[in-house]
Image 1: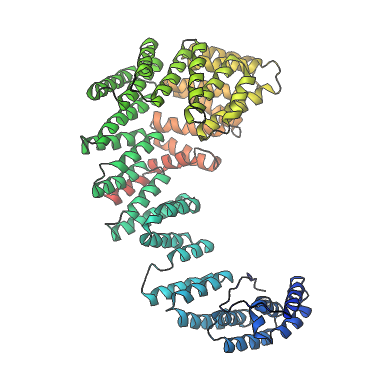
Image 2 (image 1 turned 135 degrees about the vertical axis):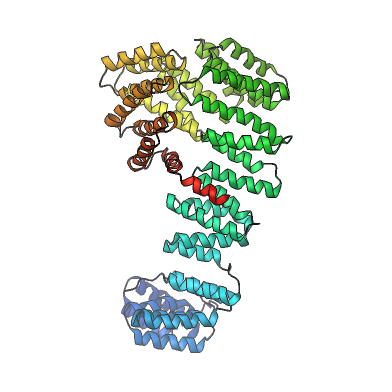
Length: 608
């Protein structure tokens, strides 16, 4: 028996009346309890008074269908149609009766005839389509809207309604087409459509299909910004930053916005560690918009992009660090003291401290920023945090915690304050005060910034997992000491401590963490073979634990970015997507795989 959704609306007004109310209520109770014979007897009496029809029709009609009493149902409906010729719901109910009694063929002809009669009336088209949707006859709802479009001579009419129906039918290509039709007529709702598509299109092939559709739309509507904006969005979802850049560049040219969209794409690429494309984007902005506000920002972000690429190319070349410092000096000299140049000064200080072992120079620069009257509170707070980090490098933890606490106190309930609290928690962890560290971390788990909350959760789990069964905390204290040595670039001492723990505690729960630390040291020193061997040990022995996906992705990353071994990298990325579908690295792995395969090159050709 066909299943129905009991939800029908009527054109007649609802009229409450006296003596039949009790009978209606009793009949409905019988119907709800499945006592159809008793309910039918009451409904038949009530139906003799037409003022009762709006109150009993739904249940009475579906009762007759449930009992397959088609003859009585047809007689009842035809009487209503004759009495109320303008009520299209009764006509549609007759078609539903045919659908159940005679099958789809006869009902199809009848429904099409009804659609043909109402297709010139916008309101009737809508209520007829709604009827079909409520009865799960979605193909007729689509037909109703399609015929209404043709008759009313508007190809974009009912687009949102049709998109929702195609969504129910899981026909995503047609759904997307209708959302695009909708946004053509309602450009102010572009962000709402983006949010909807983000929730509905999760598979790579769905995004790729949308991308191709948008290229077609751009060719059809070359002056419209809507499809270009959507194509930027699709490329960002796929982490194809160069494709997003190409579209942003074109829109910036048309709107004469001096590269505002393009700058934003560059920043997103930089935040996602796509340093090469970030460099291309900022270089373009510098060449194209000299003298603009975005020119100054682009110069600073270009240096920062080069810096991040140098920092992530192992082993780190000291000459490249010196070149970056020279670039920062040139930028600062060119622009004088300003908010942007103070940020450049801060970056320069960190290069001195962490890559050239010139901590005195770094401390002097950061103190200068903190003492600058025109410096805003944010850059001062960041510089204090950096200064605290450098004091930790030189074993002056007390100075570090003073600085962290100052920032935490002056930036409560802000991201900088949470960052400072996380640094204090890590400092307590290094000292072996795990209880105090956990008190900080419990607060930080609720932080508004996901990155801070995740870092807090990870450190908290590490402490809990390794103190629950070890009342002395000896092993965790050793491990924390090793992490501090690594932070202070005392890699030789750190490696010796790691080897000692691996030898004397071969089955400890920290074993995979120790392998991970050692692999990271080898990676940074350019010893990729040893790093790969250790990462593979983690995958083989701890593949389902917390570091399993990190290790697997790191193997692919080394083959990709450090060894330039395209074939091995592609194989590891492909395998990673299968073995770790829920990993946070999935989007990046898919993007890198597609880049290596050459997918984004074709997209660029289409744009050009």
